[in-house]
Length: 99
Image (cartoon, rainbow, N blue to C red):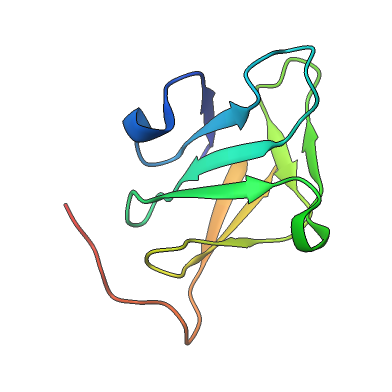
């Protein structure tokens, strides 16, 4: 699945969307709000937190996370590489799916 980078507010994000924190294009990268493709909960990935490095393409349409981020609600691991999202389930994942 492709991650769609958008400028929508975090409370309006849909599954598989992400929003840059800070929205100022010249501003320093703080992190991204990621909407979990599995459950729809918005999790924050902070650049520099626990060794996480976020890289962006020149046009900021694709991002890459140096390590997976765990969804705060369903606990699935969200891996992002050049805009492609891979979900990994392990023993910590909760079975909470809304349709």
